[in-house]
Image (cartoon, rainbow, N blue to C red; front, side, top):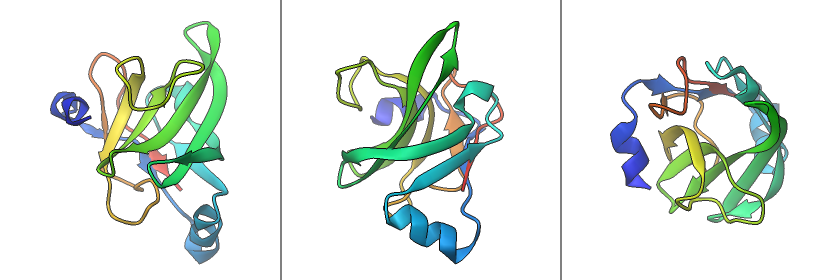
Length: 131
């Protein structure tokens, strides 16, 4: 998924964690809060739904472009995180995803708090913050 990073030119969503308790909660595969994304539907609480690439995969259902979709926050190939719409019944990280935001993995096995980038034509500035 390095292709997406070549399209991302602006800082993207930020995932913030408020204090040690939130970090511990996320490590127990709990929740991630996504805020301040230019695409309002992306914002909200993502709950751990599964494991992917050896780490938590988080999802949130919301309206987007007039339909209910599942936004997925996941890591792909141990190098990049994505906030994407993954088609029902498909695995994340394929060419059928609608990738909205991306960030490099920072080695914590958790979504990065900052340094997200919008994917032109899909994501909207500003990028989110994760906590």
